[in-house]
Length: 106
Image (cartoon, rainbow, N blue to C red; front, top):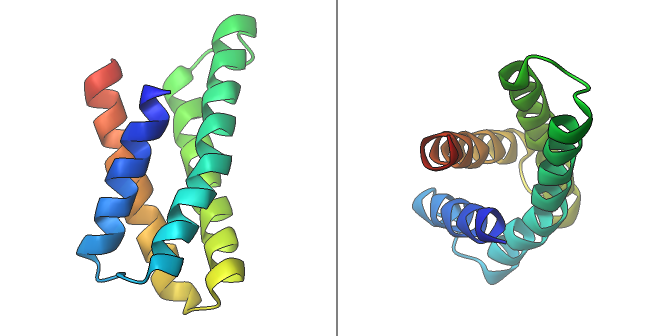
């Protein structure tokens, strides 16, 4: 639960820093994270338990790239705003979350 709350706090903060102040946009960021964050952590748990991939960092980076793309598509569909700016927003939000997670949980 803590990784999800941390991710929500970070990603909403990044959206605010980038000037996204609309409640609809911020709600979109929250809802997208409620989908992608638990799925990411579930896949990471499955990998740790079953050992699908031996190189965990490569697995984590690939999953994070997938999360960026999924969040970008979901935000673009939900908000119907500029797809390039939402891709950049998704990439920055997830990069900051990723680095924070590495620092706190490694």
